[in-house]
Image (cartoon, rainbow, N blue to C red):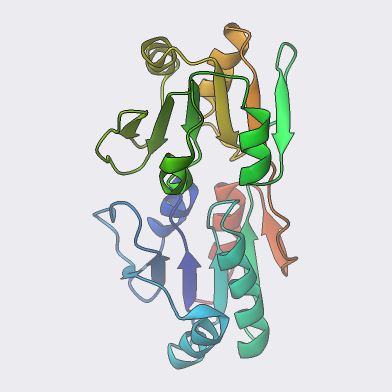
Length: 242
């Protein structure tokens, strides 16, 4: 009997997996960013209504395997996936890319939350935020003497105290150098997303001797099987009954 898969995605790694899925499987996106074209699988956009709604969806759609390939910082979605899989008695696998590790010459300063980030960057003037949309909720908190550059998926109007860029990786080393120069960046604010698509910014910070304030990764629930590479997860999926 065929194992029907629900893939929770939104990352480049998840899209790589989705492109290998047939029409009987479902690729779920939260709704942020563009939906890729050319997929054979069914694409679902939007939330489920928490863990309870997801558990109900797993049951109603006859899902035999839940695959969590969301962003490493999508802690609530991953928690809901684990809870729903338990409630629906459906196994849960996860793709969890390894975190970046500091290299010689790096000046990483760790923070656990937004308040910690603000405290760590108070002595800087031109921070570059690569956290996604979260800084947009804090534009009225910009300290005197600071000007923010914020890069997220969707463009938004600039403000007198902030420049807001809409851009999607992968980002090149030369492109990141240009951004740092144009924004006069003196500190980089980053999630430890891992992978290669957005890693160039760390190399530029290293080249220029700039500190990086790194938001710590959240703790994620244990699952039946965990993979660090899309290729390994795809190999495991191919071994499922079809």
